[in-house]
Length: 267
Ligand SMILES: C[S@@+](CC[C@H](N)C(=O)[O-])C[C@H]1O[C@@H](n2cnc3c(N)ncnc32)[C@H](O)[C@@H]1O
Image (cartoon, rainbow, N blue to C red):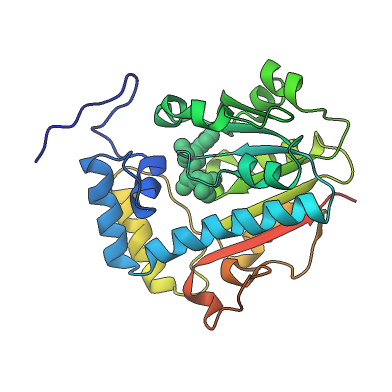
């Protein structure tokens, strides 16, 4: 095996979700431990790379529609991951260069690459903060966030492929509720979440491969995912498989990517 050099602060002896996901997306910011788990999960779900791609394409479509249809000009993206172009601010700023985005992640490797997330159009802003979703007040009270986003105006909160990394014991529903409560009417929440609903056998084998490697990974069913939206109103077409959320091209097999997805608006 080739010797691998760890960037400062990055532990390459234990697998990390951001790096495994980067591996599935064909990125270069992953290490042998990440590739081993990533491959074990692909053995369980042969469609996994396609699923990761479908998840990214959802981000593009949802961001685009939040800007165009809902008038959202400021975003809070928690669990950003290693920068993957186009990043959320690039999509929003293509439609309105004044869009502002605050990215949040707690993985040191994302911090190493955060500069790419802050290359904003001069009329807008892109900022990165290192914080943990399990402590929502540390995000909401962050100075950079408060200097970048106006929390009296609607915010697009994006929790894309992150909530499965929080255990039920951490009460991710309370965490998401705390973020929802801090945002004004007209704000929107976009979520994708892996599920065993479409192929329980493959999903449970993949979850076992991840948990055997020491990762927290929880697949959730439709009702559990729907609860993350609280009393916010799901936009059309509701909570649907990720490939079926306003697809650019209709999918012949929307359940081939095992993610629930939805976007809801605060009344
Ligand atoms: C699978 S990646 C998803 C990246 C991106 N949202 C996407 O869908 O393309 C999950 C990201 O969530 C981050 N993450 C996991 N737990 C977190 C936590 N408790 N607080 C903040 N970020 C977290 C990971 O570091 C990783 O970058």
